[in-house]
Length: 144
Ligand SMILES: [Zn+2]
Image (cartoon, rainbow, N blue to C red; front, top):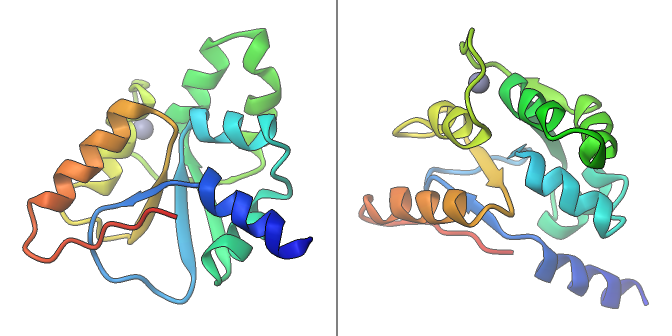
């Protein structure tokens, strides 16, 4: 039963990373679409579920801009906003709110110095990080 459940999780999660070494502790940076996905699929508590899928402890982050974007989506995303508020907040220096996509892209930067996994259901963002990966000679593209 347990194995079955984990398999489902592996399918559900697609992680895109910007290609650099990973540590024992996974730092997952997620956007609103992913938080929404976790809720929709009742993948809670999210950190436990992700830790099982990745085989290592995780810390889940979001950003102020992501929260702002969720807030602007109104009532249908109120639950996602609440869930996202309980996550850690990765620092971004955007005084004026950016879209979740540009905020996350900005935090990952050119070399992902914070070693974040990016978790998103957003096709554009997924494509973006695949592109970042292909710029490096030995891409580590994790898809779980
Ligand atoms: Zn930001």
